[in-house]
Image 1: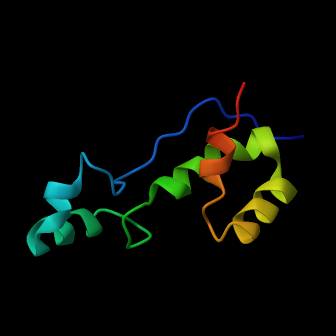
Image 2: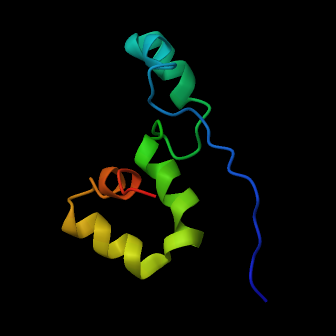
Length: 80
């Protein structure tokens, strides 16, 4: 039996929206105290979770290594 998911609910992620709260030591410490992994997420972390069901593990692994973790940009810039 497989798993089915129709939602992604990331925690604190380093983005334009969170840059001010993560810029101070106090703000970063407050966030890290609430994150079980002990680190702020990166946009690539979320992209990998969202794209995995679409592309599959082998394709993501290949792109991640071939593009040195810049595999998302070529994928999004493909013409429809």
